[in-house]
Each structure stands twice: as C-alpha cells, then as structure tokens.
Length: 80
Image 1 (cartoon, rainbow, N blue to C red):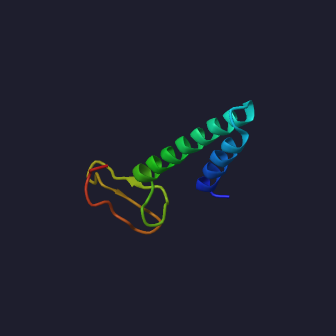
Image 2 (image 1 turned 45 degrees about the vertical axis):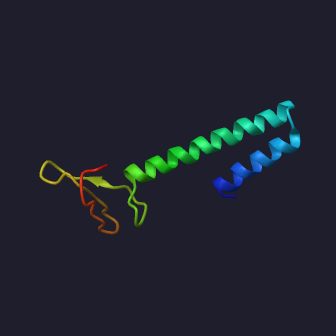
C-alpha cells in the first residue's frame, strides 16, 4: 500500500465509521499521513537528488553547490 492509498483508505474508513471513536481516529490518522507526505516532499526537495533520490552532498568552501555522488548530478545554483 502506498502512502497516498493509506491516506485515501483512512479517509474512506472515517466516513464509514462516522463520528464514533474509531471514525475520529481514522480522521486523525489521515491527517498524520498527509503531514508525513508533506514532510517527505520537503525533505526530498531539499536534500535528495532529483534524478536518483540519493542524498545530495554539500560543497566545500570553494564549491557551494550540492552534488550527488551516486549519479553525478550537480545543482546549478545556490537557490536551495
């Protein structure tokens, strides 16, 4: 099951369960999973290579851009 599928499942289950304790817990679970998805996206955008998803390595004092040791990707500017 993917994260998106888990979010949809929790939402659907909360509708089936209504406003009982179980339904409210599924709503809370869906909210947590949505937060997890947003945090993962932020981390991928900030720290992971867009080509192979390996961690980006920050340059030294002479090289400020980040690069990927796995695939050779080089960040073009210091925007991130």
